[in-house]
Image 1 (tube, rainbow over the protein chains, first blue to last red):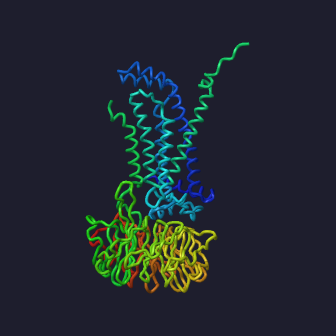
Image 2: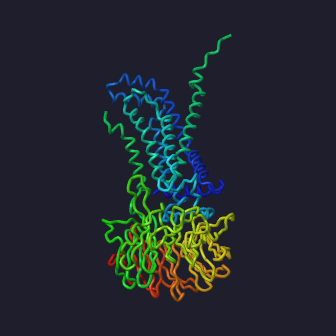
Image 3: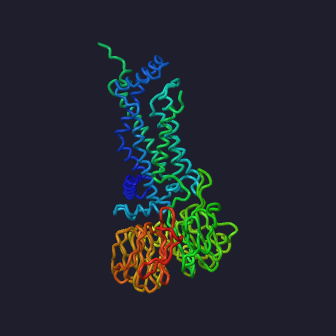
Amino acid sequence: MFDFIAYPMANLILFLYNLLGQSTVAAISVLTLLINLLILPLTLQQQKSTRKMQEFQPQIQKLQKKHANDKERLSQEQMKLYQEAGINPMAGCLPLLIQMPIWFGLIAAIRYCIPTTPLEVFQFSQHIYKWFVGTVPLQSTFLRMDLGQPPGGAQPWWAYALPALVLATSWLQQKLLAPPVAADDQSQSAMMNKQMQIMMPLMMAFFTLQYSTGLSIYFIISSIIRMAQYYYVRRQQDDGPGGSKRLAQPKKQKS
Amino acid sequence: MNRFLIWRWPIALAMLAALLLGASGCAGGNVRATSWTGATLVGDTLYVADLTQVVALNAADGERLWAFPADPENDGRGTFYVAPAVDQDRVIVASQMPPSGFFSQPRNVVWALDRETGRELWPLPFEQAVGQYVEGGAISDGIVVIGNSDNNIYALDVESGASRWNPPFETGHRVWATPLIVEDTVYVGSMDRHLYALRLSDGAKLWSFPPDGDDASGAFASTPALQDGTLYIGAFDNRLYAIDAETGTELWHFESDSWFWGSPVVDGDVVYAADVKGNVYAVNASTGAQIWHEARDVAVRAGMALSEDGSRLFVGGQDGALFALDSNDGYVMWSQPSDGQMLSELIVDELVVYELVLYGESYRIRALYTDNGREVWTYPHGVAE
């Protein structure tokens, strides 16, 4: 189903592998950077939106207190506020949805390049670009882990460290990037955001336990990039017009 | 608060992920074919790995003589892919048993069966390997040698199933080729881009091609053909190699447009080989010069087979068609279509060619006359195409 993404992606991995001294980890890492560069406009928009929502938290809380007994009204007022401020509260889901086909394409691409079963490699043999034909299969071992296999089986025990790292980095990413929620906020969207912060890291860790170890590299590097982006956006907004740093600056004394 | 409303987004995401996993073919399943199967003809009996069973068939009429396990529904032994290795008394087969728990791994098992009855022989099957067996083993001098996707080549005592090479010979990548054993030497290719010559008795390395330190070639996933001290083998670097069997020195190579996955066939002074894009070549065995080329424009996984008199060459395509070519010039003498995929090695007897055709997740074995492609029998019997 995702072969239209998987085949070009697998060929790109082969190209990067040859370019980067035949290092599978380096090839997957650079591919991750490229994918994140491709979806950068979306993720930046999402992060800016999240930051804006943070700024509107005091107004949101006021609305929550004001319409504590009328959920429908509260929802309407919140949406009105978001519309006026140009915030899309669902913007956070778009990069996620766009990334899903990329994940599944990548799962297949890694399996084509570091094959564990022959049928799919044979299928891929008909779609390899002529410049990379001799490159398959890629070197599969990294720190004695088989990048084409999931943790467990013959993998060393530290292969489980990668899903654990995926869990930790994606949880941290969710924590930073998710729209802020007040501790006493029991609204539907707040609860939803809280659940997402738990579900997404668990889902990613589950993927990496089930599929090739190489996929963990993608998730870990992606999370780190998102976090770096977050700090960049925060700094930009803080330094920009109306940013919190500027607002905090003392007014110059007239001489 | 409505709990469903709270969880709807996470639930929706998880459902979407599960849906996509299933649709992408990523979801695990016990009987989902991940490889092709294989068969071995010894005397009048065809021994076939048939996914859920190993069956022994009468080669003359396709009648089933025995099956292991007899009742795969209630007494399953996993999925059998690899071609059985057969000696005087035994049939050595391998299967992949499904994982017992959600996070556990499949078990990869080698079994020894009585050649006459299909009865299990070893008290305990061999379960040391942790990867899938993709191709079958070879037996010589009471030892069966078989490669595994865990990068190792195992040698087992055919009497007891005990490991004879301790530790097994470790290569740098998966081993997806059936070894060739000649006297005390085992020749086996690895996906680590080397062809190895190992001593049968203890697994010591005699040589590797290319030698250590030299530029690597392509991955080797087929069994070499041997004639007059020369090994012929294709690789994933689009090359067909002729290698001195004694020293591992390259004599010549022939370059194609795509991978050579199936084994070449050598007959007199001609080597026949097909690449995965369906180009069939006849090459001079002494010099590597091309004699003729026939483009079939169909994906070809398995190697070719030659009729006993050397006049016909058989090639099976992924589209399910079997072609009979004139070995003198590559002219197509006849072709026989099927609705399945043909990925397994062909077997040719005196007058009959046997093919294994994959239909989704089940196989059919067909016996066809070599001179005109007419059907002799099919197994299972009475299954319409």
